[in-house]
Image (cartoon, rainbow, N blue to C red; front, side, top):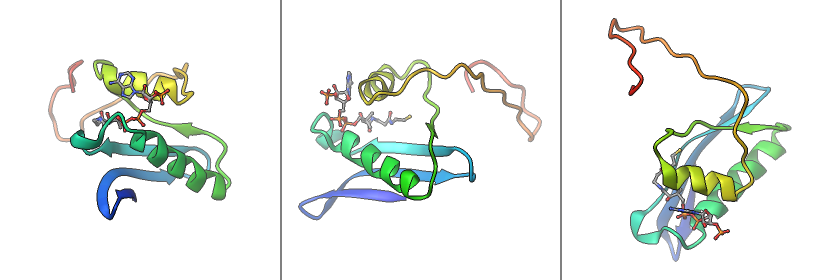
Length: 100
Ligand SMILES: CC(C)(COP(=O)(O)OP(=O)(O)OC[C@H]1O[C@@H](n2cnc3c(N)ncnc32)[C@H](O)[C@@H]1OP(=O)(O)O)[C@@H](O)C(=O)NCCC(=O)NCCS
């Protein structure tokens, strides 16, 4: 978990990790009062540096299709759409629907 501070106050966070092959980030977030000031770009750069330091060459992440803000954000950071598809299966008995 990496956090970004501005004058001591936490303004950004990211959960970053890897499986020995690919890196992943989860829960990328910037305080709503502090968005569009470059903090998202900085916290993602920190996550990328952490992964490079661990010898990981590729970073992957999941974004909800309808999250236009996040899709634009990652596009401007140089991310491209993967050719892979994601499969999911609930293990607690609930039915899988397109929305969950
Ligand atoms: C997505 C999020 C992390 C971006 O953080 P941010 O600090 O506002 O982003 P930055 O100011 O660093 O912007 C970096 C780039 O992304 C682009 N960007 C950010 N928000 C954007 C938006 N709503 N629409 C279009 N572009 C956007 C900026 O244009 C900027 O590019 P530039 O530097 O070339 O101008 C932030 O909006 C957020 O926390 N959203 C809610 C949580 C979320 O959806 N997280 C992602 C889950 S996968």
